[in-house]
Length: 120
Ligand code: AMP
Image 1 (cartoon, rainbow, N blue to C red):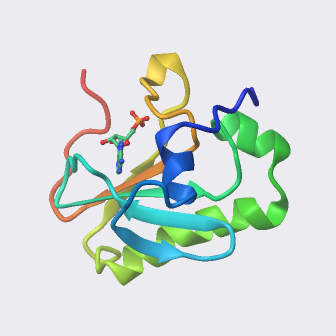
Image 2 (image 1 turned 90 degrees about the horizontal axis):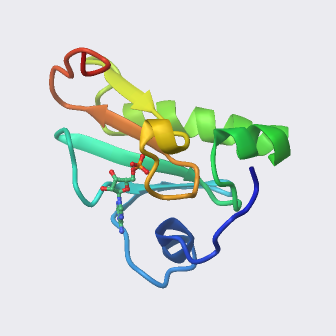
Image 3 (image 1 turned 45 degrees about the horizontal axis):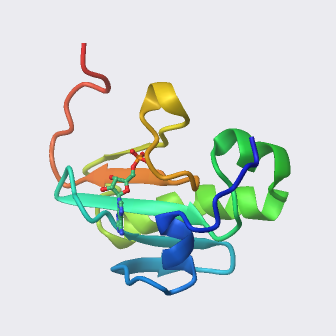
């Protein structure tokens, strides 16, 4: 899937058309606080490239982009001081997962006991 909408909200954040509360940036990755946090720490980690989903990213991104995204998640967790207490990272992909923004993003949650992984 690579039918990328260049006007999705994260594309606009990357172009600095709308603000974000940045927590991390490098050549390939931007991370910022979620606007509607579901935990004391809720950060979104996104590739700077135009990728809709993990499916798209895994098919088209370079090894350097893929490594940078994964490394950024752990770096940010350390930076925010949740590496010892623990955290969860997840990415919603497509309709069944309720992906709302069509630009790949990893949610990073921490700062409290997060409970079971999925609603039963
Ligand atoms: P998902 O359902 O996995 O696509 O998650 C989309 C996430 O983006 C939600 O947690 C929203 O709260 C978050 N979000 C939407 N707009 C913004 C924004 N302008 N800045 C930061 N987070 C946002």
